[in-house]
Length: 342
Image (cartoon, rainbow, N blue to C red; front, side, top):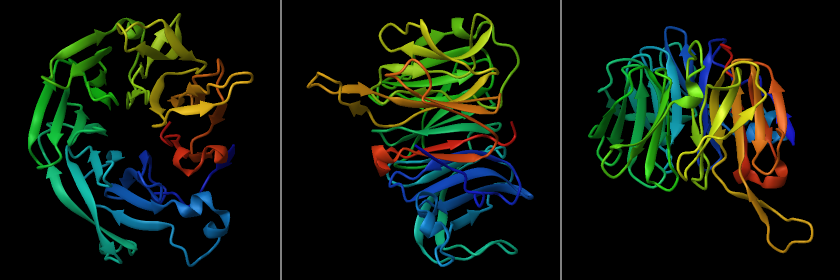
């Protein structure tokens, strides 16, 4: 495993709150603050994974800078088709599409290598947008907001709304789609996690016990579903007075396992999207396992394999860090962001 800290990934000293890799692995996006506006930056991945390319001054690192948001950007997420969604404090969600190479720049800003255009602006939220998630197999985009709601948008005909999910009594700070396509899960400051049916958008489960002991709030509560759909892992849970990431099993929504070790509240959980395999000694059948990264307010990040009882690696700091497990291949690249505001 190799750790890379590209110091050139920056918003000119302003905070970065979100980061996501393009599905083809050639770009990544960051979202956060940028001077007097919110900022989205699209970066070239090649200088991250190839040191020779990083040192080549002819290879651009920043591909495009987008300062269209009126206030800080809280979340950026790529769709499987390569669209980029950004949501922020200005209550807006912007949908971006690549429209060509070469481009302009906002007056006083940096020139862009690529041109990305906003093809839709979604305006139905009444307060800050904190999280976004594209459905893996349906033309839907879900958004979570400080207005206590989740909105499901029809990505085939923006800005059409499929459903508005109300039930939380506090800020909704995290959402994640079931990879099987049956559920959408949301987590809120009201100390509940709710699972919604995607057929009729009714509530399938209400989970509160792991969060009863939680004190205080966190900026985000980014939960994640395992790629096989069997496990949902939440942020900001407690067990015996200690912070955990709660593991919720799909079968019966049982909650008897968790990830432990962080000293402060867990804020972000993210599974790698692939089911991994390794050969077992003396067995012809490979063992399947998943990989998940967990970030905390203690300024640390742990990476776990479901086949191990202890974390694979612990990272402590407050910078953008890339974990490059070369043995897994390019499609297994993990991009880990330690929020610098923590």
